Image (cartoon, rainbow, N blue to C red; front, side, top):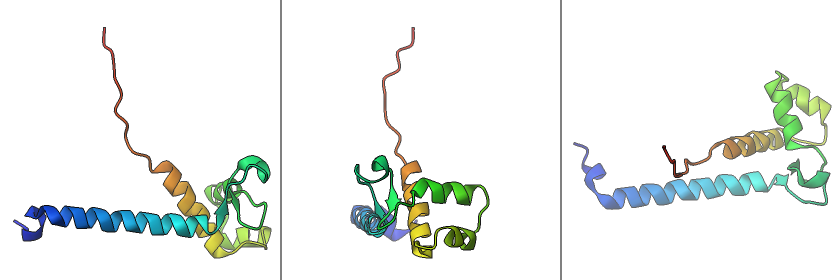
Length: 104
């Protein structure tokens, strides 16, 4: 048996560290992505541009390389593309929700 796993404080510390990492990642993403109702109808864009995060994700999904995207959008950086990927990943990483099911 692993000694530290039986210690309840281990799980508290692990949870705290995990939450801090999530917050740090979110801050990094939000330093590159803006959601403003006055810009592109409130869709997420790379800060300082009107490049939609969805356009970057779509380009990657259809097989465009990062280099091709950087050619197509010369006003963004590799870090912006990584932030768009992280943003998309965070959106798809949802928790399960409990709900009532009525069976007749």
